[in-house]
Length: 196
Image 1 (tube, helix red, strand yellow):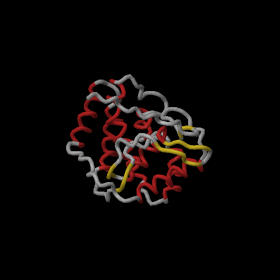
Image 2: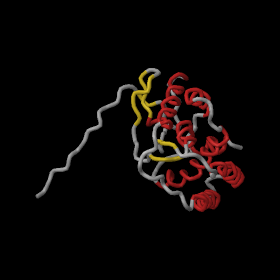
Image 3: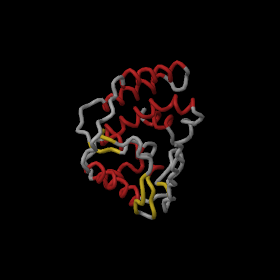
Image 4: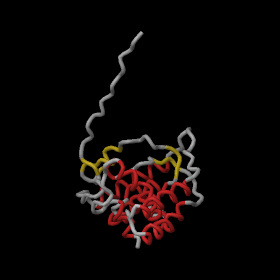
């Protein structure tokens, strides 16, 4: 018997996104701090029952993307090499916590200074807490202090910045090949250049 598929409608969240990469954020410092506090709440929650995603070959993937960036003159070799070195700090032991896994500022909705919703939980699971903080603040270094203040202040800023380098190095080819522009002001290319 054929069954009609159910389509679930996502009700519109009130408010607006905390920010969008490459665009100025109109959110207040208090809203960014509230986002940090929300991330802390998530990270303090019990680990989910499913296993963490394995990242075997992460170093090889990073090396391949770096080679691609240099071979196609997307970025000068010195910028790629420097960011590759910075990214090494992410390859360290850590205690896994419940992470969102793709906590872009555009996935966090606010109404005034209050978090009213977080979308796109498809990557959620056990992971590195600093990855969530880095994803939230990618291209938003001016709000890192606010986020950390809301989070609780015990985050390693060098590792957060290393995640900025790693995420940007790994994303650029995909973005270009899928019609996105990592060269827009405040986006991945600028993030990598700012580490010099």
